[in-house]
Image 1 (cartoon, rainbow, N blue to C red):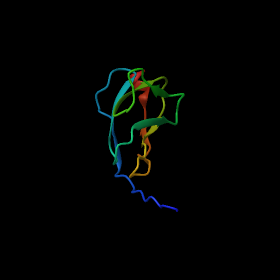
Image 2: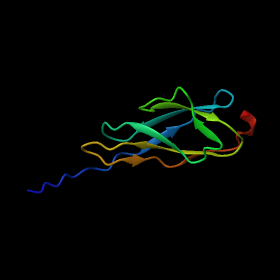
Image 3: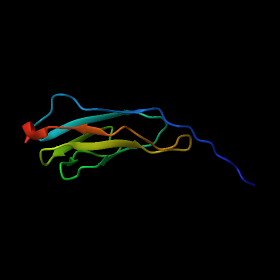
Image 4: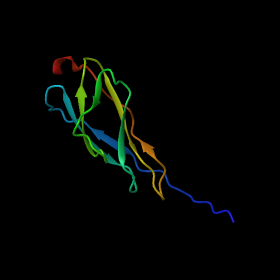
Length: 101
C-alpha cells in the first residue's frame, strides 16, 4: 500500500535587524513560518560575519559578530515538519559596516 502525504508551504519568514546594536554585533530576530520546525541561520559571507556565541537553536534570536567591513549576507531557514515543507527567508544584506569596526 502506498500512502501519499501532502504537506503545505509555510508562511513567510521575516528577519528583523534593529537599528541600535553594540559595536561589532547585530542582534537579529526571526519570526514567521508555520508548524513546529526549528529556525537556523545560513551566512553567505563568512569572511564578514559569523554567528555569535549566544546564538543557540532554535535561533529565534541570534547575534551576528562582524569581522570586517563589507556586506553581511544571511538568510533564515525554518525546518519542515509533518505538515509543512522547509522554508527560507529572503536573503538579508547589512551593508557599510565600516562604522561598526
